[in-house]
Length: 218
Ligand code: ZN
Image (cartoon, rainbow, N blue to C red; front, side, top):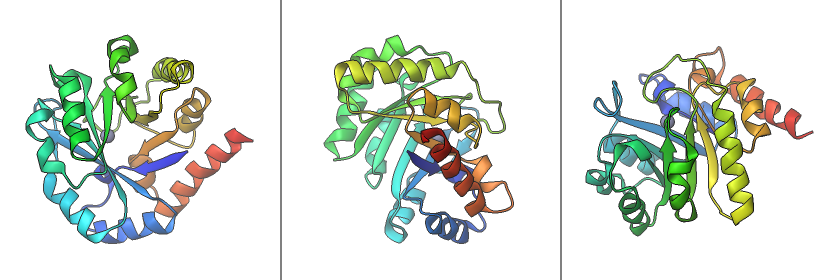
């Protein structure tokens, strides 16, 4: 189980101390949502933040591109460790995966709530990560869509049946409650933003996610 805090919900004025606390809680991965204002209604971050984080931290940088035609921008994210592109954002998904891998970076594919697993089945052997959106991408403060757990279950079965190696990541209102629903059906990477950063203590919130995971495993 990997917990990946989303930078989008950190305090941008106090990012350094937020990340210090995240690191002290034992976190190794960081999720960075890149939004272009076209594929999703909002705009957020760009290559500079990835370059700065690479230079100044040891986090594994998990970059989620919520942008149209990501193939035109992938080369700007050479400092990422994992790049995930949306199935819905490009006509050339396989080419995107090839481009990411040619940079020596792990490649992921994300699907929106209305996108079924069957449309990405042929790309599954080639990817390191599948991201199942459990809310609409690019908009905060939404309710976790429970029906998405069926997709996680399906991906988990396909992985076992075919011996695929991808991680199953979930993104969208992951809390100490919803994390259990996702664990149950086979997700193993959990992006969490608002829950971690909008409480009283970042460390406490991370610990409660870890605890929820351990309780499930028991
Ligand atoms: Zn994301």
